[in-house]
Image (tube, rainbow, N blue to C red; front, side, top):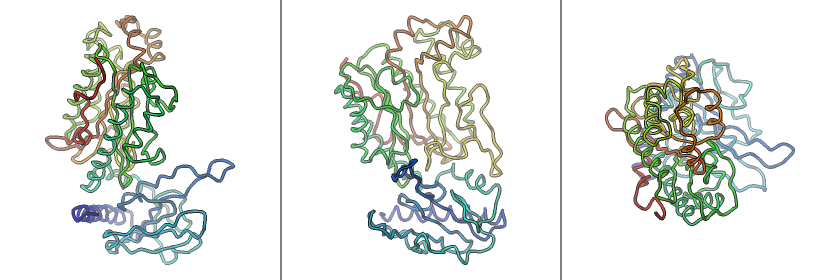
Amino acid sequence: MSPSMTTLYQQHLVILTTRYDNAMAHFGLDAIVLASGEKSYYFQDDHTHPFHAYSGAQQWLPFTLGADTYIVLQAGKKPTLVWPVRDDFWHAPNPVPSGDWQANWDIVSAKKTDQWCVGLPKQTAWLGPNAMPFAVACEGLKAYVDFAKAVKTDFEIHAMRQANLRGAAGHMAAKEAFLAGTSELEIHLAFLNASQQSAFQEPYPGIVGLNEHAAVLHYEHKSTAKMPASRTLLIDAGANEHGYASDITRTFTRHNDDFRALVNDLDAMEQTLCRSALSGVSFRDLHQETLVGIATLLHQHKICSLSVEAQLAKRIPQVFFPHGLGHLLGLQVHDVGGHQIDQAGTLSLPDEQAPFLRLTRTLEQNMVITIEPGVYFIPMLIDKMQAEINNHGCDMARIAHFMPYGGIRIEDNIVVKHDRPENLTREAGFSQLSPEAFGSH
């Protein structure tokens, strides 16, 4: 690490140490063990699933953690890293990464059969999968530490800034592949190459949808068929840095038509929402503001003739924008604690107005969140609207015109501030509306 990164990492450790010392004092614990987890296998196979370390363990180290790694925390002592020794000839060696970070740690190498836990205090709790028999039950510990994870340290924000730089490079390469008329698979490969990662290293499986596929919120396929006349590309994909994720979505269009006009207006609305992500703001209120914005767009673009107030009363915006505005972002793409309102684990669950809202907390300085409004033309939801909502006011011919385009989602990663939020995605040099962002007119 550079000297500046070393300083950020040391400050990060001080904050984490304080958080966990407070947790041990609160619950009367002498030690906490954090486990990265074990590899799991496909049924009746000797190949493993892609491995992602437990976020509570990953948070402590400045590199990507592998399986069978443990962190032992005791008040007043350096954290101990229990590093797995691989004693086989099937896999590459697994040396402890070098670097200045080691000065802050006690490092113990251990085989799977080693009894490294012998000598731990009696009151030792466990966080992570596959708890050992020696660990004491500690109800509430996980909620206590998860709540604090929402507020990021400067080290964590820097890692996510780097993840946005790599993710943005991937999106721009995907845009060029789309304009060249390539397949969804080729677009995804262009994204992976430019963001310098394999598909297994992505923080989540990238979504690459052309045309009608852009209306599938979590479209999981990658068609190999070339589509030189494709109208729309919706790509939702990110990158990892030290385990921290970026989560970026862009919608590109080929033609300068009325669908592009809708994309442009949604982009302007999204940027306004991003600037509203201030500490003290309720995310529920921000989501409600989004519904008002969607209703306004539907009226302006002659998709629905009803007033904004009438649309909200009939829940018309939810037909075209069925998901939540965003979520916490960090070591997990949908980061933990989004519904918690205190360290005790008290939950504020979504209501029927926004049943899929992943974040219901009041925003705080240095939370990192996504802002991702969308407008989609989803046949199932439109059919349901026609069947269940009388006098819906929607122009079905206009909707049929837009259906071949699929839909729109625009997503940025935002650091919440007291006055001016930091948009990690836009600052990565990636503007949704830059002149080169689109193809021929």
